[in-house]
Length: 284
Length: 305
Ligand SMILES: Nc1nc2c(ncn2[C@@H]2O[C@H](COP(=O)(O)OP(=O)(O)OP(=O)(O)O)[C@@H](O)[C@H]2O)c(=O)[nH]1
Ligand SMILES: Nc1nc2c(ncn2[C@@H]2O[C@H](COP(=O)(O)OP(=O)(O)OP(=O)(O)O)[C@@H](O)[C@H]2O)c(=O)[nH]1
Ligand SMILES: [K+]
Ligand SMILES: [Mg+2]
Ligand SMILES: [Mg+2]
Image (tube, rainbow over all chains, first blue to last red; front, top):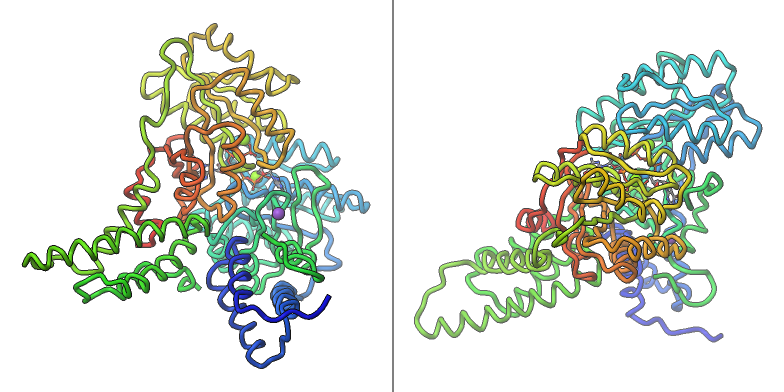
C-alpha cells in the first residue's frame, strides 16, 4: 500500500479513541501535544507513522521498570483497592499460579468486614489447596495479618497473600486502618509486605486516578493489577495513572476463573487500545 | 494532581462572568469548557455531544428571547454566567429524571424485582438494602440468592438477610433459573409480598449468562428489573447499559458507591441510552446506606460545582 497523506482529522480521531477508552482529557491532550510536536518537526510523514507514534508514546508511558522482589521467603503481598474491584479473586488467581509453580502459598483473610468475605477466600483456598489464616468474626484486620505472617514464616511458606476489605480512598479512617495493617505486617517480619498491589477495575473511569494517588500516598504501591479486561472496557485510565504516578501495571484480569490472569505486557495492552501496528487503527 | 480533575465548569462560568449577555460566541467558548468538565465526570463522549447540542439550542434560544425583550425596553437582571449555569443545570436534571414511580408494584399478588449488572457493581449489597428499605415501608420482602457462581455469594446474601431480619431463599446445587422459578411458592408459603432476585455478576457480552437472565425474566415476569451500576464506571457505561437493556428492558437503575468522590457521569449516560433512570443511590456499605436518587443534587456533582 502507498503512503497516505496526513489528514488533520487524524488527531481528532485519536482523541475520540482515547476519550472513549477512558484515557481522560488531560492525558489525551498531553499525548496529542507530543504527537503534534512530532508532526510540526516533520518527523511523522504519514498517517501510519502518526498512529505508530501514538502507540510508541503509550507503550513508553506504560513501560515502568523498577526492582521486583526476588528471594524473600515468604514473599508477603498485600492486596488493596476500592470495593468490588477484584482483590479476593485476584488473590485466588495468583495463588493458583504460584501453586502451579510449586510454591507453598498461604492466604490471610484480612477482610473481616464484608459479609462472607472470609468464606469467599476459603473457597479459593480449597480450590488451590492453600491454608487460609483467619480471625474471629469482626476481628482486627491487622491482627489477622500479623498472625498470618508469623504462621507463613513458621510453616516455611513461599508466598503469603493478604486479602483486605474494599475501601474507598476518600474514607480517612479506613485508609488509616490499612496503613496500620501494613505496619503490623512489618512488625511480624522485617521488610514485609514486600509487595503492596493496588487492584483497579478496567470499567472505572477517571476516578481511578484519585484512587491510585491516594492509595499510593498512604501505602507506597509497588504495582497495579487491572481487572475485568475481558469486557468491553479498555482500561485506558491506567495511561494517566502510569504517566503521573509511575507505578507499573503487573497483571491483568481477564475473567472470573483461576486461570484468567496474565502478566501485563504494555505492547499488547496498547494494541488492544489503538489497534494493530499494520493498517488502520480499528480500536473503538 | 487534583488540578487534573478539571474545574471546567467553573471555568465556563468564569468566562462568562461579568458579561451581561449570552452571545453565539461566548456560548461556544463556554460549551467547550463544559465538554471537558463532563468528560472528567465520566459522561460518555456520545452523550456529552447530545447534551451540548441541547444546551446550545436552549442558550441560543435565550439569546433570541432576551434580545426581543431588550427591544421591549426590559433590563437584564441576570448575568450571562448565571443564565448559562441555569440552562446546564436544568438540562442535566432533565437528562436524569425518570417518569413515574421508582418501583412498580403488582396490583395483586407478589411483586418481583430483579437485580442485574456487572461483576462487583453492588447487586448483593443493594438487594439487601432495597429489602430493608421496603420492609421499613411495610412490605414483606423475600430475598432470593440466585448467584450460584461467585464463591460464597449465597452466604453473603444470607449474612446480609439475617442482619436485616429478612428471609433468604436458595436451593443448594440448583440452577439460578430453577431457584428463581421456585421462589414464588416459597414467598407464598412465608406470606411475603415482594421478591428480590440477586443474580450473579456478568458481562453484557457474555451471551450464555445474558440468556440465563432472559430465561429468569421469562419465568418470573418481574415488575421491575434494576441495573446496578457503580458510580465510578467510565465510558463503558453506555455499552453495558445498552447490552443489558436490549436483552431485558430495564425499568430502573441503582447507582452505588456514591459515598466516594466519583462524579458519577454514568447517571446521565445510562438514562440517555436506555431511558431507564437512576432510582436509588448506594451511599455506603451498610444496609442503611441507601436512598432514593435525587437528580437535583446529582446535577451539581456531575458538573463539578
Ligand atoms: N469479568 C471479570 N470479573 C472479575 C474479574 N476479577 C474479578 N471479577 C469478579 O468481580 C467480582 C468482585 O470480585 P472480588 O474478588 O470479590 O472483588 P473484591 O475487590 O475482593 O471485592 P470486595 O472485597 O467486596 O471489595 C466477582 O464477581 C468476581 O468474580 C475479571 O478479571 N473479569
Ligand atoms: N462504599 C460503598 N461500597 C458499596 C456500596 N454498595 C456496595 N458496596 C461494596 O461493593 C462491594 C461489592 O458489592 P456486592 O454487593 O458484593 O457486589 P455484587 O454486584 O453483588 O458483586 P458480584 O456478585 O460479585 O457481581 C462490596 O465490598 C460492597 O460492600 C456503596 O454504596 N458504597
Ligand atoms: K476489553
Ligand atoms: Mg474481597
Ligand atoms: Mg453479588
